Length: 280
Image (cartoon, rainbow, N blue to C red; front, top):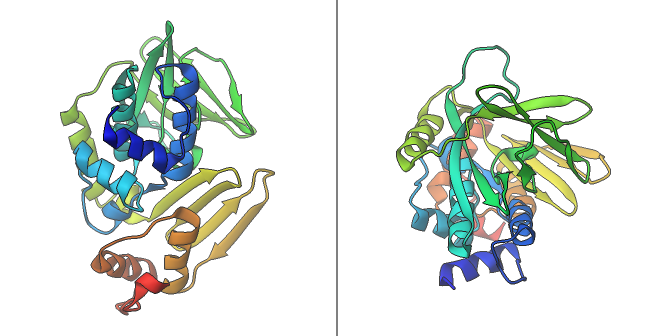
């Protein structure tokens, strides 16, 4: 088996025999969302992330970093291909918290896996509402996992993934057609450079786990436990932010200048970060 894949398995603590079956698929989705955080540090600090698989693998597997949808799902797509799954990567139109009815561009990357005559939507990169299990591509079937629920709604032209939280909320719509690398490159460039992109305007980090869901938007940290209790904390100085990145999200940024930009954008100050930030 590919040496890279073993490093990935170690990163996400996958300890079973990898086979192109539902059990393996389900475990990989769950574990990747638990051990590799969703984060947009690069886009927020002025860098468009590379979509070359060797760069993604180095960043998300070997470094203490995460990524957003293109990186997360290209990594998972690569792993699924090595194992032998039949799959394709797609782009969807994001509807989540959309205030109007205008047509949004295709900017969200995810995967469709075909397995034993059934299709499953697989997505390791939608932030706080990321489904941590494969969602069957069956119209109007409610799929529950713990307290999260998802369903696929289909009309004549497209599918829509919806999320349950006391009511149904639309996440994104899509046609069941494979996207190519060029499509993803354009979407990635647009979302990481457009001044109106949420990933350019705000720092957004999420990690799920057995203890609940951790989120960070700029300097507002939240922890939602499995029983629904929410702890909210405003991180008021750079030291607390850096500490939280490491302890809650296992993120350590190698370049000091990236930290400088991060702090300047969040706290609106030109103050230098502690010189020996590696000791925080």
